[in-house]
Length: 233
Image (cartoon, rainbow, N blue to C red):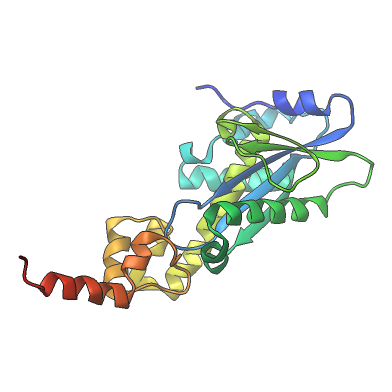
């Protein structure tokens, strides 16, 4: 199994001009809840770690390829060895500006959170973003890395922080809205979620601008019901 490395970070920081920042997000596709982004920087300039942590560091890889237990373990390790920033944009804002723009807002929030923690030593930040879209309106150095959560360790770390942070929020939503099963599906459009959405309607954390949620609104359910009652020609 090929694991992410710090090679990209070493290349960027070699001249002592930059911090290398990995950025990733979680929650673009679900029907409910926020989109969460994370921005991280490895604390150790030489990008080494103690020999006894070699196995633990193999957990810092694409969050989608880890079990929930592995992600939790990696989360604690990252919190210890990286500077970590988090940005969260709620469903209301997602509906207002669209999910892509909300994702960019979450990334900017994560970056602002991260910058407050950094040493004031004159270095600028160099962004490494997972995917193929640069952060709009950002004037500093940045580049995209397609599949970055599988190749760049800082991006992989950011993917884990974003994913675990969001999942923990859904454990709380489960307590508030137990009939929806948020703790299991985390807002994705599973059968359990869709059945609950049709039965109970949207909650305040649902993304009304997303079509499956919009169709579950009472006025649209009634329209579909009335349409179905009309005789066909």
